[in-house]
Length: 83
Length: 224
Image (cartoon, rainbow over all chains, first blue to last red; front, side):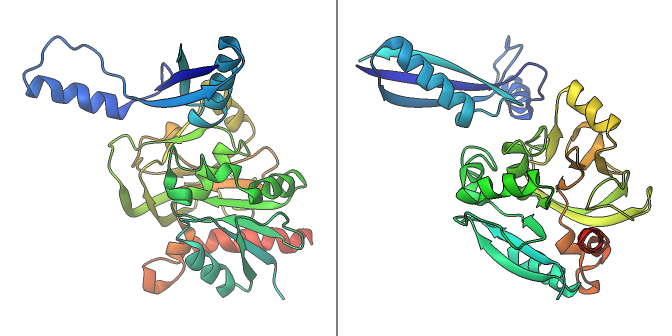
């Protein structure tokens, strides 16, 4: 089976996010109000071949934890969709 | 012949010549080690110099960590060998889990290239052995991701083990506890963001970096 996977890597709670904070500060200057928090992160799109959705999830989460995210700073969330 | 020092070169490393020149000026027998090397046999010291290994793609050190040579560096470190990570090398050592914590983007989101004043706060490492506690050294930094980050438990362990080696006297990048350099538990693996090789001659404005490199070579000479 083939799956589209999206891995979202975001900073853990309590880790300073200078990028998000800078974006947040810029928004009022552009006329956007009502935004109370911005957290910056990265998104990766993968196409996976696996025997089951569970297997695809294990594959995506393990590669995300091993390479895409640094667990000291970040957490990785996986979303899957069968093709 | 002086201590045998291997300077590891990844694609994108750019401080290897400076580090090798500074170490050789102190009598070290320096050779370069390509990132495909599977063995570090015969070396007394391994230096991971600064630069942008593998373009710093993904995160600084994230790809370099999986280089063939890093398996050998881990084995060398576990056997008690002296491993010195400078700037990008420090990032690689953190990604490799040879050192705890991580280097996060600078708090101000600017690339910083400037002299910094450091205070030596521990002599329990190959980098600082014999250097007076409280000594001030002026050594440049040159990084975008140099803010040292770790959790509270790790910080406590670093303090208890006297493993914070160098602190900025005026924190330039938002590092936790003003940390500029740390050691592993054994004191044989060290990482620092400042570049000692860029403070290795009067022509460069400071020779303070040689104090640290001399300490490394003296540590090795003492144990050989």
